[in-house]
Length: 365
View 1 (cartoon, rainbow, N blue to C red):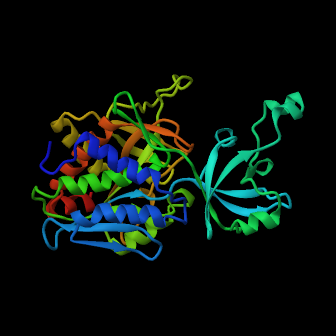
View 2: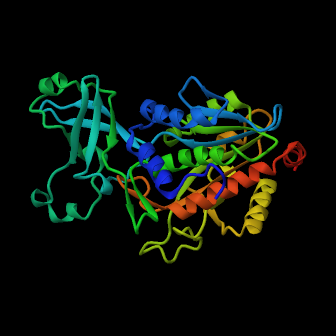
């Protein structure tokens, strides 16, 4: 254990703190405040761009290479788009939702008059034709029930189109604390990782200026990645994110493997990024020396903030790292604490090895 490293209970407390605050895309204020509170005691300064992305800056060596580590603050959710005459709400998804995981789930509608509880509903299966029961319910066939009896009553309760809607789910642990579960693990886990890496760099020398934090609006187009990269102007960047786990029934035929407890993920390819070859090799060589297993991820239908980081300025060597997570983009996801701790060890050690000469070598790879 590194000096200053958090205990298992303290790490779990940080994950609970970060995942239970609300912060869907475009409405990350609560999550940003929670993140800033964690960064402040570990940073020389906490900086924010004009969209709401936040980073803590910590100098290992003044004038050293700028290393950006960023999760993303936003979780998937919805926005109120209309109120029916009967007082039900119509919604627009913020991020990717599979409607199978929405029905009968509780959510929080945040209004100017306070939070309301809502429940997603649709026509009940008892009242539809047999062939309809086997079909996915479309988003436009669903509604949100907040208990209002009319449009006027919903408006009096404080609801306006544009109000954010967040999944409602408490954080909990499984398997004697070895697994973390709850909402917003995608991607408060990446945010927590940025904090923990910054903590592990506190008492050991390194030749860099580290910017550790979180972006906004990743789930709707990685928009905060543009602005935070413009703020930091990184020399090297790590997007800290999650991947769908492949270790549940029905996924046995998938060629690539992403499993809980099998070590951190290094994403070598996704829809927006070909992982930087030199940085990949440095990470894998370091992991081998530390005896940390690394899973290699390929996600051709997804992407991370690294897609934006690597094209900042005249180019920035970038990779995406993180964890396999079960049930992402739903009310409850599950991840491994061991994977988190190993990833923190690995990223911290890679940063210690990124001196000016190594960064210039990578930039000219």
